[in-house]
Length: 75
Image (cartoon, rainbow, N blue to C red):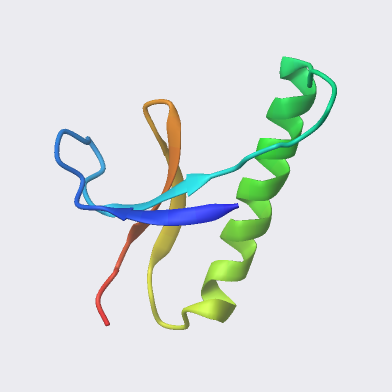
């Protein structure tokens, strides 16, 4: 999994970090299973944000077809 900053041009949510959740397998992954993995990853990240970035109001949200970390991105 990686996160890449985007300034949010054309986005309803604005700037944030796009989450890339890559599933690598020699076999095709059924869409239902892929959705479960993605949901688990998003929930796990959302739970870790307060401990990793104390005092910041950060959220994981869907922005069209992608997941993005949004909120207080100030240093």
